[in-house]
Length: 298
Ligand SMILES: Nc1nc2c(ncn2[C@@H]2O[C@H](COP(=O)(O)OP(=O)(O)O)[C@@H](O)[C@H]2O)c(=O)[nH]1
Ligand SMILES: [Mg+2]
Image (cartoon, rainbow, N blue to C red; front, side, top):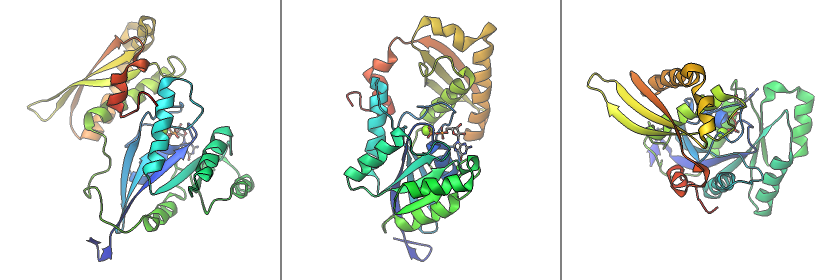
């Protein structure tokens, strides 16, 4: 296949890394649109999210993955398995590091595992806006990978150079997605993710990740608007008050934030209705895992 006079290229680039190093921020930056939710909390990303980007004749499919760490709970195990699955299927692997933190235990284990499988990886030092040059160079020298990039996913420094590198590194072949496609996440799920991001941001330290969000109804209005009904599921009745807040203030704020972003995403008026329900032990419910594309028995 020919794109713009040159043979087309296409490939998957998996972004791996410890929790919170900036993987989702980077994928959004590479795509130029938000395809994956971002919070200051660990384990925000629950499954593989594709972010598709085109550079010249190359279509690069970035795979955002859940953070890799030593898992304890079932959901953690499934998320880590999904991350490694993303790496196994990819043509290239990029290991993202928080430059301010350096090579911590989680990152060291990721590099070891890749090495034991003879898997070459590109090293990406992120958050360079937070460290001084000498410290950064010392960090780069610490790890010997064939390619090292220093970037800030937050402000975009160095990201274009890295993208150009990936564009030339993916193999020749036809594009796998239509030119205007930027992700493969269905809209209903994306809409639920947007609300989950707001729940995480609004609840701060309370309810670490006992909450999950599902879109239950999606109804097109005759006037071009859309009515979306979503349920915020929590694990215990005692958590209801936390999500609702005094006089329902919290859930109202979550709804307002989410609606604003959904209107931007969908480019139309959104009527958003949020409900809070208890679903005991949803973290042990196989059905939830299927929905997220996670392996319950990982
Ligand atoms: N200062 C700085 N913060 C960043 C950068 N990239 C990501 N972050 C922040 O790091 C936190 C975690 O980001 P996220 O993309 O969710 O990390 P992930 O868990 O690896 O996907 C968020 O608060 C981001 O705003 C960066 O280049 N510089
Ligand atoms: Mg993430």
